[in-house]
Image 1 (tube, helix red, strand yellow):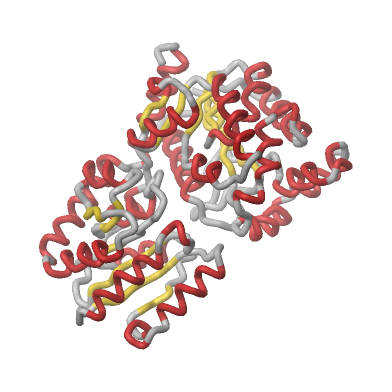
Image 2 (cartoon, rainbow, N blue to C red):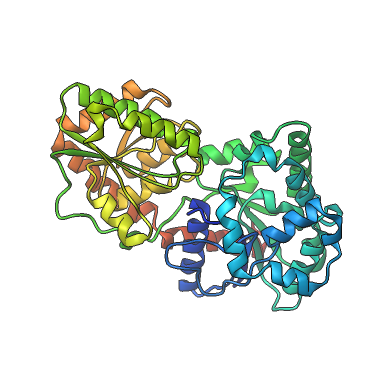
Length: 428
């Protein structure tokens, strides 16, 4: 089976979607699939480097930006575009991508969704020429529906079935101000009519996105997010004293680190022996400054560690030093990758009762749920784990086993390849 997977690079940010896509590509290759992974905008940034079959970057972020804002660059020769698409330059530009917010990207998003009618039509033509010049794929899979601007032209040039993974793009779209937001939604719903299959990481998100995209629910199938679980060995014994609460995610208001700090302060003021370990990139400098000011309070300062987690070994060491992990996101999480990684390492998680987490905890048994946005209940859930260390150990063991059974990259690839086969054979 020949699969062309088109993903979106996230610049300098370690991106859960990119990690999922790379893990899926590796696992599909291990199953004997011929996978071509095509990054758009910037090279993908994953811990072990891109998987085999990764091509050069198309729709290079610098070219896309210049073609949006400077008409001259919609007609420049390939020599100029190739220079702007070189990897070191895209990597440099990617350092600024994490600071770009949805409210500033409305017009460019509209243009990309317009496909051949948009300002980046030159980039679309190059991508299609590349695809048409090689062996025909059986399936083309888009990493998210915001890439669907290429689909109408793709269907005319490439005789392949088209699948689309759904990975949280609705939250990006909701942040685009009007009138661009309405145009984005209209164009998105127009484009996705030509997509054969949608893949969501949870049943709840499949229900939501069927309505959001206005597509039949039966076209949206569930494939749970998978990671390479064997890369996350547990410690010989889960730390108990001091009780180490871990946070590993982007440090933004949406991810809720401030809620965790508030809950942690409650534990400290109650006289509990606890420490807080924080790791993650800081795209929102103002928010991070506010959180750090709270962490410098006299009662907290000596109990907080800001960890650098630049690679997979450091991430594993981070989890192994945690008694529990919490990412108390304000917005419903779509994939829950950090929670899956923590459970794979045998660490119980405390997560909001929203998004993917209720299904994830029900499936794995690896953690505790609390009401979203409720720092008091979060503190109570963490205190419950502290007061019942044997129960917390049991949650960690259940989560580790559950992650291996339900959240392994191999299982994700098996389910995905089955859906691809059904699609090719016309049974979807």
